[in-house]
Image (cartoon, rainbow, N blue to C red):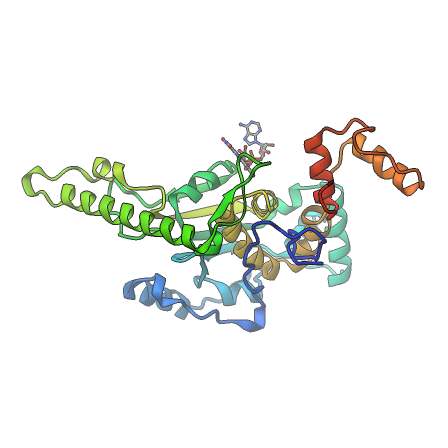
Length: 341
Ligand SMILES: Cc1cc2nc3c(=O)[nH]c(=O)nc-3n(C[C@H](O)[C@H](O)[C@H](O)COP(=O)(O)OP(=O)(O)OC[C@H]3O[C@@H](n4cnc5c(N)ncnc54)[C@H](O)[C@@H]3O)c2cc1C
């Protein structure tokens, strides 16, 4: 058995393109050390100022999130996610579901039971009562995938208004996969060290050259090209930043899709880092989400016929039940079985 399930649970088939899962963020592990290499001195000072302020509140707060507030959690070589604000906690979900007046007398255990019921039965609106606002630094090609999740509010750094920094994503060698033969959108395993080395050298040269051209256009005195157009030659690897606010229901949907092994390694790295924040923020919701969504399996009627037959001791070949080659492969993969010979 090897690790690699979406929630890190063991399975028999190795993930062909494994992700380095960051350590879960525990409330008592805080404060998270600030990685100053990916921030300017000014940004480090701003974060320290934000964290120095404490205000009394009547609102429900999460101890873990209070510890995490404003601290960048590193992702990839130069990116991060940091919690800028949040609203609600596990109990807010329960309160909304019961349309209750106050904290009530229910126990954490009964709250967890209700949350599990809501998650199992897709009673989703109580989860919309919690909100998370993140500041994210991410490469543009990741932003392009991320922005497809329309049920969030976004405000991005403006390359029209401000100059773009000389910050480009340089993938780790083992994050450079070979083109998959079965999934036209995906990769499988890492390329050799030589190929990875050559690829990184080329990308670095491309980025250096493109950035130098960008600077030349900006620094041309009276003939300086406007920032909004000077930037058009920059590669997809340059880093952008945005604020991203989303409710917990839509955030869980984002995590389900983007923590999945079929999502690209880089966006998975962000989703996994956010997952570790959500696990600390709403632990009961996270446990139910892991059980009923991340580790769950949705199968077709044809696949159900195959599984029922196997449980009845009358195994049926996947093809006999009408599964296409792709569906059969995906079912074996989802069940953690080796591919058919
Ligand atoms: C592995 C993977 C590969 C992908 N490949 C591609 C690709 O090649 N090309 C590409 O363009 N995209 C691609 N996508 C993006 C994908 O098609 C979705 O746009 C993206 O995952 C956002 O999902 P969503 O629409 O459910 O999320 P959201 O936009 O957050 O929407 C959440 C839910 O709200 C509802 N909703 C939102 N907007 C509308 C609407 N206008 N009308 C009706 N209901 C709405 C739907 O129920 C939707 O599921 C890929 C995504 C993944 C995970």
